[in-house]
Amino acid sequence: KDGKDLMIVIPMADNLTKGFIQTGFQNDAKEILQVVQDSGMNAKMVTVAGTFPMQDNKGNELGEIQVSRLVFEDVYELNLENIVDMDKAADTYWIHPALQ
Image (cartoon, rainbow, N blue to C red):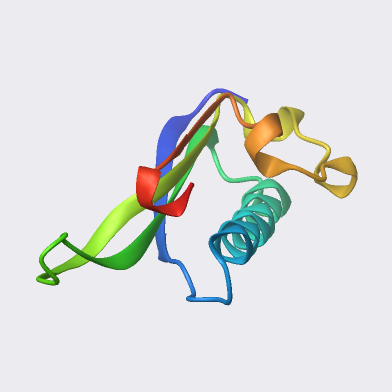
C-alpha cells in the first residue's frame, strides 16, 4: 500500500533485566503492527520507538529518553504470526547503549 510514514512512541516497561525490557518492547511493537495491519491504515513505513526513564552518570534524572527504535519499510509485507525476533525483521533497529 502507498501511504504516509507513521511513528508511534511508547513507554517501555521496567523489567528484571535489560533483555526482558527489550523483549517486552518488541512484543508491544508486534501488537502495534498487528493493529496497523488489521486496520488497513494507509501507512507505508512504520516506526515504533520506545522511551525509558534515564539518568546520567552522576545520577541526575534525564527524563524519558528514546532508547530503542524499530523501523519497518512496508508493514503490510510482515507475517507477524511467524516473526520471533522483531529486531531481525525490522529494516532498521537501534538500541541505546545503556540497554545493550
